[in-house]
Length: 385
Image 1 (cartoon, rainbow, N blue to C red):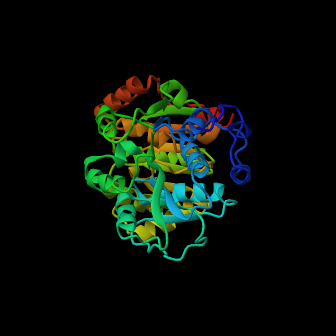
Image 2 (tube, rainbow, N blue to C red):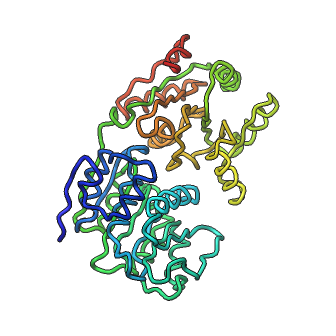
Image 3 (tube, rainbow, N blue to C red):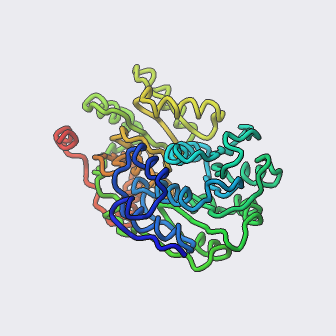
């Protein structure tokens, strides 16, 4: 077994030169805490469970580890990254492809109705599949990667608290049937529950758990407030007042239903706001176009259900508004984690319309060991300093 050193720089990890070039070209200068801990262990011999809030570097951890673990000049399917949504698959695909830009590997996105191109850019080089469980299972079972055998060295399941839910389990089992005794498994998520951990014990071998459990640390850098709106109907006027008082590069407003998404989008448009909504009831092509426009900065305000609560990494998002508090308190950390990325300043504002939402807020405070105060009158000074 090769010895890999835990260090405070990427050079300390004995990474491939071509991989180091990609890391620095992507703009990463120093590994985060979870990258310092996780990368050397994953590229060793252990299965690993990564638990840390979004924005602390989990995607970089498993992407760098996978690129280091594969044998570049062995023309086989060696790496798989499973994501539970198309949007998250797009995000991770773009990250790992960028980091591996100097390695001349085949990166294949396996989602929805996109046809997997049988012609590889590098037929004599390794291949990595990134996508949703159903599509990747189909690619493997139908041997869609022409001319390459399947030799899975590393399987990553991202957002595994969602990806390992009951609906996905038969498909996950099918994918595992293509793995060998030497294949390694990495599970990655911001939240972990005992039920999912119990499932993971069936296919992991004494995994090393790397966890950032201090919830105060995980929400560090995100200032959180609430506003007492006293009724549901006053929430809209409150948001209008906020946007008239603030200059924000980009923001996301979260709601709990497709119907409210559509209703609010029309209400904002009637007030001449440039805003677009995103929810699971939309066609995939339309969702892709909206996310692409939002990433490029063409949309300043995105109205969304929890479809974008995970894995969307856009540094210019400085404000998250929970128009509705999440039904599942574990989603709170995913939502507010869209802002304050990689140490940048971020703000989250929670709208309280009735007593039940006040009770929900208290539950969130207890869960994450935080106090979410009422937004003060001089909030512009707080946000701009």
